[in-house]
Length: 108
Image: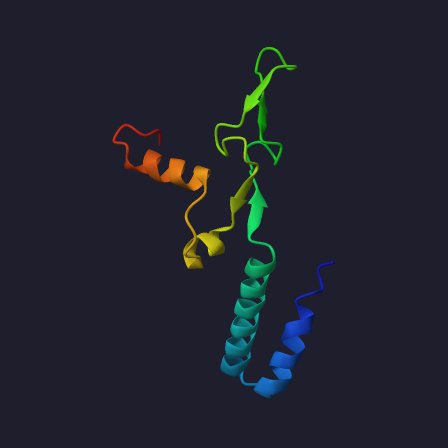
């Protein structure tokens, strides 16, 4: 449903007593805490290239497949917030992307 945003906005208006700055600060802090909890509970997302299957289909022969070149057959990536705030080692796809960014003749 699209009305979920009302849940944090109503307490923000009540606590801000009509002051817009207080309401915005409360709302931003509340959403940041919710995002942090979401990162802890769900740190991975599916690979957008292979849609989480870990395999790519052949272009000519549709029954043939190979490991996904983006995720290397591991169909999950860490979310951006986890990549920024986590001290864990990067996964295969993140290391491959970092190496690709360093190449001088990288595709644009």
